[in-house]
Amino acid sequence: MNRAVVVAVLGWSAGCGDDPSCGPTTATVTRVIDGDTVELDSGEKIRYLLVNAPETTNGHNDCYGQNAATFNSDLVLNKQVQLTYDVECTDRYKRLLAYVSVDGMEVNSLLVQRGFACVLHISPDGDARVDEFKGYEATAKAAGRGLWGACDPIPCN
Image 1: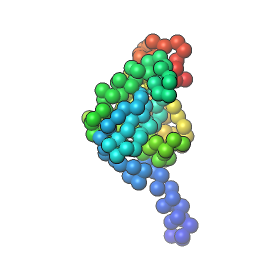
Image 2: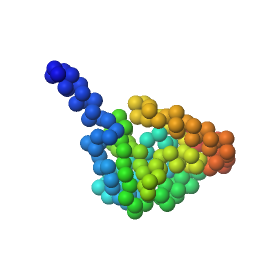
Image 3: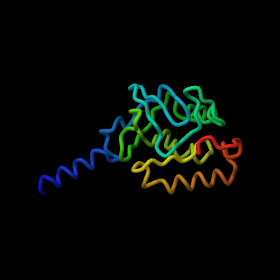
Image 4: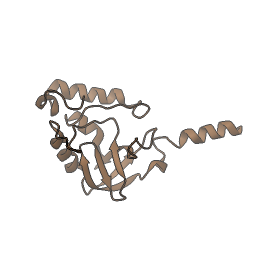
């Protein structure tokens, strides 16, 4: 294998989702910032991939935002979570971007399925799962679940 191919392969794999070089693969959540962001015992902040919950920070109090933050807190606060990364490790705010699971449940998908959040797709992250999440959102919207039945306008669109 020539050097250019080796460098290209190594460069590609460094950003991949199963590569723990992005951050920890397990950690304890010590603070829930809002419906789609948490802080770990290491001090690192995690922004959930493919999820956009209504805002409750920086002076915002969007419709259903506190509900989303409470649901998130009930699922993960003071619990050990598993973290899976995608293509990009961090966002522009230096938060780690991850799918977060607790007790065998993926929090990202639960937030959308139960109407606590909308889908937010920022390629390349989530490219492989965006259709799955859009399906969850369409089902929640059709059933009037969560923010879809409580908010007008929808705060996270």
